[in-house]
Amino acid sequence: MSANRHLVVYPLSGVKTIAVSIRVKAGSRYEPGPSWGAFHLLEHAISAFGTAKYPSSELFRQHLEDHGINVGLSTSNSEINIHLKAPDQSLSQVLELIDELLFHPLLDSPDLANEIKVIDQEYQDKWSSPYVKYHRQIDQKLYGPEHPYIRDGLGQPDYVKTLTSADLQNLHRHYFVKPNIFIGASGNVPTETVLKHIDQILSNHLGSAVQETIPPTHFDPSTLYFSEAHSDSSVFHWFWPNHGDAKLTIFQQMEYSLLRTLLGDSQSSRLFKLLRTANGLVYRLETVTGMYPLAGYFGLFFSADPTKYLQIRDLINAEIAKFVSTPIPEAEFSRAINYLNLQINNVYDSPDKIASSLSGYLLNDGRWIKPEEYLKLSQRFRESSIRQLLAKLTSKPKLITYICSRPVDL
Ligand SMILES: [Zn+2]
Image (cartoon, rainbow, N blue to C red; front, side, top):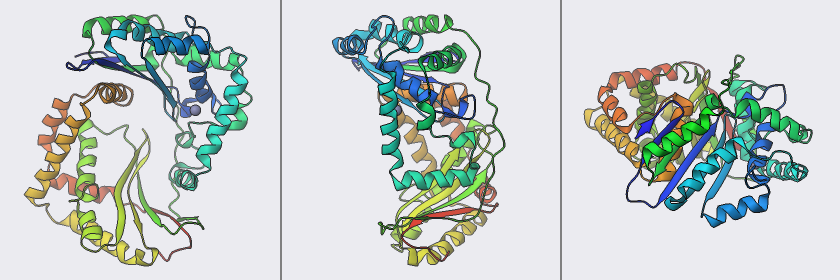
């Protein structure tokens, strides 16, 4: 394994494939100006019109097929993601494609108008789902109606329609530079060669990092009822706001995971056993967390018969009070830690997942955190700290949201 701040290569013997995951800090929340959606169009354009060396969609596609290379792209609120997967014999083609896709895509094409229509359809498909609309309203209550954290990665169709190739080239020039790019590679690869080669590609494109200027968030704790007349299923969410993860250490993030495992995220968790196993009151039940740098939430999600809501509410409140005030039995505590430790190793089982996990660490945490480091840190867990964490997280007023065919007495 070799690494720097922008690149980690993790060789995996016994496989015949390579995977490269590239994350560029170029999502809707970083878009300059009051409108957004240009990064999404840029993401489509990167693979749609070919690159300098393969200057049409036809030539580009043929090249990928000839060497068995899969390329997948996506955009979110925080990044453009490019994922490459190929047989190991196509290593040199993959290395060349990293350079071509990142730094030499053809963005000036008469087909741009078609791609804008495609995005419009993608937007209609996504927003026809009532659950997407429900979660949009939740985000508005958690962060404020216009906050950059809740900008849809797909963008605003009316704004996307106004964009030109020149707009895309301008954005591309400023954002596709080394300080904003994070790459993980894994599979049957010669580590040092790959590291040197990609590092060379990146150092041809220095530039400056994205400056994040995030305005304050506004939390609105008033209940959200989302009417879904054609559905008999009822889904409830509880959200307690917090300060996000910018100031959380790796260990504190691990404490969140342990709390979630103990409280509601496994079949042996407290709330699962109480609400589902012992009383049959819920079908789905999970804890939920959302983490942006400066704001986030901790909460619960469950699906249940709305006439049982008050009974469920009282059981949850009593269990949280008990969790906070009573020491967690040693057997329960150590079983949860052991389970988490085993999950950490489960991520490192395929080139795809490893590459994606590595680039995610570089983007979100500034460095790769090795499995060994997690395992070592997990020896520091104290049951009293986990109880204090739940007390702290649930001390503020919470937001209750639900989706149901009729209003519920809460
Ligand atoms: Zn798209």
